[in-house]
Length: 467
Image (cartoon, rainbow, N blue to C red; front, side, top):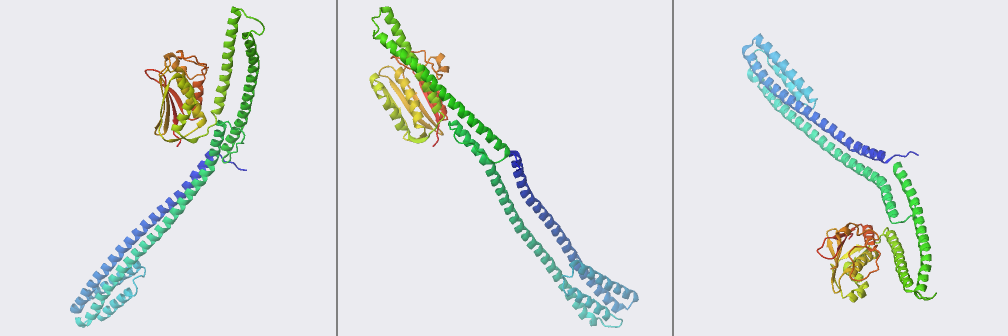
């Protein structure tokens, strides 16, 4: 089976379109050249006919003058001049017949007959009145020849116009057919070439969404088929790596949680003095162990949460959401903490519908609001607002807390990084909340930024407007 590459297919398609349009252009050029040549011939023939008719009319005048002179003078020299005028007039008539191609009808023959009759009537001793009817007849035939020549010129012009109109119709039809053929070729080639590219795009999107079940089957040109095979190999390889990652994560989670649980229970027993009374120094050691075990447990849970967020960020589910309701739902989840601290959350959002991933947006806003609640002073204000701009949504969270230190601003979104400035109240965070926010914002095609502000922290999530 013959296979062609993408480049060969494109060249073949362009060549076929060029042949179609170039053939019509060549045909148009030939038609124009033919019409120009025909117009030139018609012009030359019209000039020749007009000149011949004028020459015959002038010859008729000369012939009449010679005839009258011969009748009056009866001179042999004048007789020879008359015969020369007759021969010249007949030669001019022959030239006119050849130039017209015999299209002047019966008038050349009648004119010749009238000349012969005039020549026979011009004899010595005859009165001038005897040849007057023949001269009058010759004048009438001159007018008939002139009118016939004019009609012939007009008829040739009309024929040229009809041929021009016929060629124009043929050229229009050929142009329409060639354009339709070019459009068909372009559409067919586009469909044949774009379809595998679209399948490749869909396969890459599925890989990005962590869907490795469907086989990548790409048709079309040979090089795109080969690319499809490579993408399918990548699909299988990514599936194997993802399965291995999940197995490793489950194994690590099990291997860490099991001894950690036993250690936590053992420390709890020591803290409750089940084995026996503890001294002051031993109790201090137990409290340190409890703190470190709890911290280790939070670190493990945060690591699992971060991996889960990274896994979920590959799956995007956009649904229509009312932005105002989304913000209200996030605030409602933190209502108890907000009331306990006496905080005021100012919600600002347009009454618009946005296509967003509800689950991811809830996690993003909840993490930002949670940090704002933890770092805000008692009775402070928190601004949670959404702003719609052309092609973009902005979700902002602003608090009145201590803010982010300058040395922490460049790495605040890295995992397990906590700011140097303490919160007003003790908090149990592990420093992965903002990392999760960054991962989910990127998954939705946006970004999160820390904006400069005189006091507190100002986080802004920028997302594309998919509506």
